[in-house]
Image 1 (cartoon, rainbow, N blue to C red):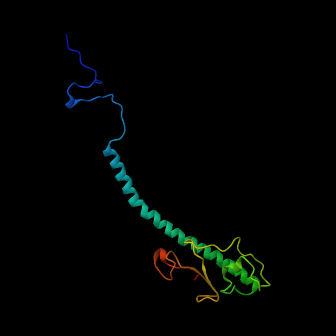
Image 2: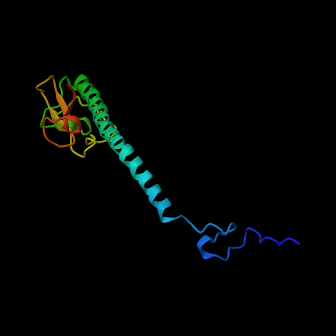
Length: 156
């Protein structure tokens, strides 16, 4: 007669080598959670700066597109009135009729002049220092000059 072996699903009597094969998983270990957190941190450290750099580039591109649209509206204003709005009238002359303008056939914009992507009004000068008119944004920092995202966005 041979001795019958215990099934593998039973625990061994010796607690030093106790093993249950059919023990259900009860969650993640602390080490597994730490490994996942480290991987997520590494991915965020790699992807985050690239993502935020793209946001800065998209703000500049948005400002360039808005300045281009304002320039087209200013050109249409000039075709109708024979001149560009005065600096004092500003870009609002594209949206609301200036009181002294008899040949105004606007509005030349569908809605009020937009703010730049950083929440400030676009700057307008007529006559401009770089052409018939200047339309520009002072960039992210709100000051003249600058580099990168702080660089001014202009129509010249």
